[in-house]
Length: 498
Ligand code: AMP
Ligand code: MG
Image (cartoon, rainbow, N blue to C red; front, side, top):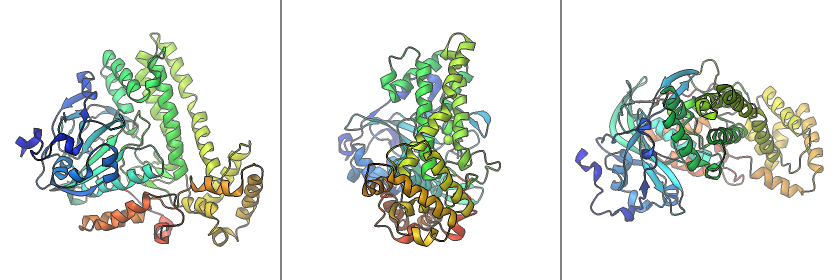
């Protein structure tokens, strides 16, 4: 089997499938990567394949939908031009520093799209690497399908995210706490996999040249407009902070809980990365935690802005040696940047909240107006998504809220506020429709889809993915896709079981 690794099948020329792989990451200093090939699996089979994403990457979906694709996406054969490697990084996990690295992921290369964009193509669950520690290097089918569903839903919601190209079953079992589970490999597509933890890795090793190389590389790849800045590390810190502030605001606005915001799970590209015990809130409650191992609520919904700032502080610390030759000045630069996070987050959050409420212009009381609605939702345990959907379509507003005096008073205040802008009611509704989803990946729907998929029935998941690909269409999806599930979704737990 392993003999096949470096040859593509004779009947498929590279151009037929459209692979155009480059390897700029491999040109970074050796400290950042180790060459390692995926470990072939027993029986590769494509479970899901993202045709539109493949086409967007310049790949031929037809060429890859069959056995050739299954072999590549399971790690049994390499696409032409691949040069597989595992990336080195560290991370603060639940506050504790650890040296990590890709223990079960392998970067095949960077696909250059027809439009000239560059995307990492990474296999997750593709076998052991020098960073596997005691892990088996593998992934279970359920969690990989979960990442597929939720990352694609996030993309459709307009939230920057890594994406999922394919999930291939391995025909092998993996052993997890819950027992044996079918194994699978996810093909992840990302702007890059550079993490806060990648910078921590270089700094912890005391490798100044590597740290400088990483700063320059990250800027070139994600912030090319800053290549001429006087102080590159400072420019990087400030821009990464801005993108994180915008990203976390988007999470908060759609009700997303990442669940494991360790510094190795925060990408410098500003994309959401590493879908583990993540989920969307149903009832609005800032204390919501889904992860079974997050006992102290470190990564609770309402704590996400604070944790993002905490992670950015780790990034700033990692950059200290190169921010300024004088340590005191370096700390000053870092503190100045970090001190802006709260304001930048609030700026993005409020801009989004205005759109959710259908507001074009700005008034000083807008934040208080939004907060009053959220307070009411918290008190009444109202469903976050459905409340905003009701404000969008007006359809169920009467039924749900008519009898509630607090809500009625809030509504009068909001309607009066809507009068104080020149845009028409129709324009305001259109704005709300573009911002408030009708459907999100409800936990009970995701679980049902994954359970069916594990029984061999992939249709439930395909239907769910199709619905979630048009989240802002308020007129199409059947009501069962909008229900919060049993008990209003309360008590739902996700397990890190990966
Ligand atoms: P995650 O919780 O997925 O962000 O992973 C944290 C670290 O654990 C990363 O370094 C992973 O590569 C590693 N890891 C997770 N699962 C496994 C596994 N089954 N085998 C080897 N390494 C793993
Ligand atoms: Mg991770």
